[in-house]
Length: 139
Picture 1: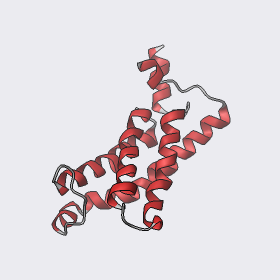
Picture 2: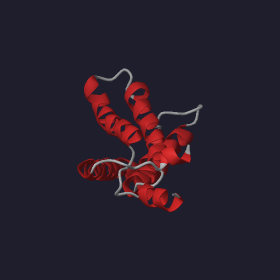
Picture 3: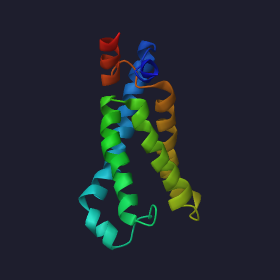
Picture 4: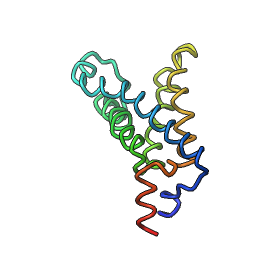
């Protein structure tokens, strides 16, 4: 199973494309997660966040975990497929729970992040990643 997690074999152009995709969605997602982290108290006090298990603090904390920490892992290509999972869940919740009754234009940003994350989950990080380095060490 660990061999599949660290499998990074692709063609050179595919590896470059995966690097660009990881960097782009990772950096762009940080622009959503870092403001949540920096304004945590204000967001909770204003009741601006979807409660998870009845707690907006838990919901916001999980979103920050995915949008900041998992994005950093994605950028580095570290545990990439595993890191994509919380990001996928967060985007599904944003699109279909938090914005369930909203018009499509409100769901669209989450969906635009969702599909690259699914692609990264399926394709892996490529050879320009820490996963590739770890995979070579384990061989």
